[in-house]
Length: 97
Image (tube, rainbow, N blue to C red; front, side, top):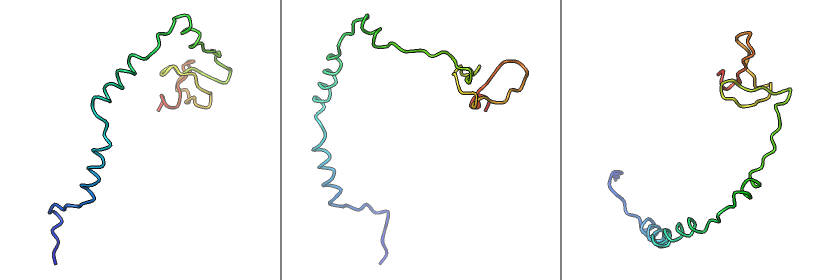
């Protein structure tokens, strides 16, 4: 017997799983109310405290590091590409690509 694979096939499991998915969906109003709560529940940060929270220790460039003159990221000397000219211009392997 030949089977027509292009013909639509109906499976009871598909219908049941679709109904189950529809039941699990949250109501549209509950989603929007949750978003409103998130937007309005944030604290106002005091600028003086904000500066304390974002304090970062900056370490100067070490002797085994260089600054890529293309991307300006400080990288280890092992990531330095071979210099094409005699100038002190250094590029990382990614930028020299």
